[in-house]
Length: 154
Image (tube, rainbow, N blue to C red; front, top):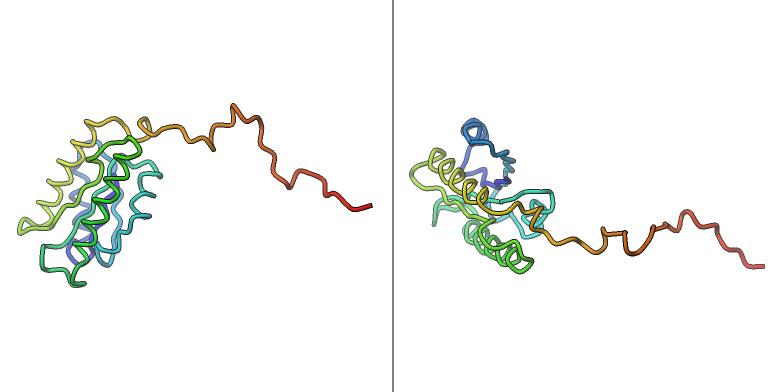
């Protein structure tokens, strides 16, 4: 499970301490200067690296120091959720968790609920279709050009 979070609204030490309470889920927390910096390639890369779910923790509505960072994060998360559905993983592996008056304790509870929901889904790796460029069984062995002798003109 990957969690991208706004460093202006969440303390990494407190998140790490509270994350130790998560039951059986490995949590990789990634601090950002603003949740709006979580762009689509970062989010997709987390799934490529093996995450079954990705959450973005944003600051409170209307309290973003960068004006619209939390709104950008939400739109990007929705775009990635649509991409995941399009490739057959389904919706629900991407979440936006907004900070409220409950603070870090509320964030951890929301992350726990998200982790439980993702656990009930099929593993992202098991659901991913085989990539044609990684299946060499049909194309035979691949040979790089470094192994071929250079041709010289006579």
